[in-house]
Image 1: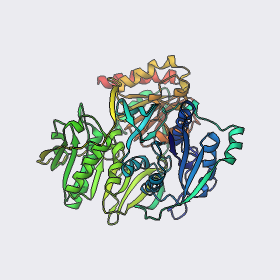
Image 2: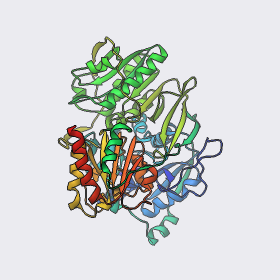
Image 3: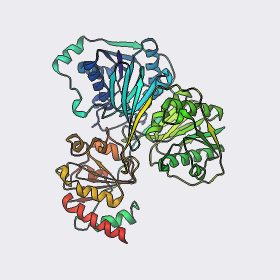
Length: 248
Length: 318
């Protein structure tokens, strides 16, 4: 049983988001990069599966050497091997095609990722992988159990949840709930030492064009000041919400 | 050539978000001088689609569509897009819509943009504005491929009426690729879902303990609002995880968001800042939420919330 977890390296969730002066690219100055939180839930789930079944867990990233520290962290958490397809990630479709090309020669049974990355928020890669490879796909996954070659999953649906059975190979995009926050693994010293000896394979990207182009980024317009209402005059809030904001 | 849009009907008919998406696509169709074709599945009453601008409704029917099968539905939408020679395909932002949008885009070798917040900025080149960096920035993005798949952010484009006489046809598919089998569906009965609600009432650690949620529940009932909470509150188990809103929880794009006893950490704000009007109630005047809110009251929730309930009841009786 082979599991592959797709990993994005994203700015730490507390980062201030700034852009270059021409507005065309993200300004990474002083920004700390982390494993995309949704991917981290998927990685932790893979670790649980590894503990209870005998399986290999590898991780894959499409990116430049800037992703290496995040990949080392996934190895320290317990992944067996990291693969980095060496190119700037141009857009979601580009990333999905790079990973799909790799998977055609190096098949895995279960491919896990987060439901979206917290930087570009495309939510594209897992669904596109499913289309490119013809594997079934479960999005917004909040529970996964493996027995023999059958997978039982829960996914979030509007107003509830759905339980599904699926066969392998399968693509699953996870989120919080796949594992709980408190189950996330922090690498220990032994893990960090071992990670140094684990393989981080850098492979060449397939040459292809992007399907989209960023024209510019804009930070959100400055927020007007908050209108403060006196604690003894709550009626005024109701009046403002009705007459001024027109939301009640 | 038509503009194609996928809109899903629920047991209660078409939801606001589906009709918003149809209206969005109709606007593009009018701009391009094209007809609008709506793809839906297992729907019985499609009058709402005609009211919002559908010229044609294609209803996916048959055993392959009894339940939501992402690959099968994506395949059908892709086939219909080819038959209709559609260059623009719009998908709604329900969770099912999000499930299939990327699959459809890859099937059609299309450029794909999700989280779109306004009508296209330009048609030549085709450029859209979308939320990115967890709602902390906008990205203006050009879609370069001939076919474009667009997914619209919730509550970002109003549903507008645009009545058309429409034709209806059924569409079935013979071969089912899926091995996915739906075992059971659990609905959280009666409650308003946080991501669909017009009003969301949310509370945090300032409430001091789970036993104090009675007044929050009462406030949400008076407002007809969905109930939510901050991450720390769901982490310590005061409230279920299904109520956690924020960057790694549920995304809220309501018309009104009321935060009670929530300080407004950057990760919380990232999950709610596409809501239109934000109200904060907090004892700490320096809480970061006051910088993100439209209206605020500095005060103790245990004092303010009961007063607010009383005032709202008075208002509702008028």
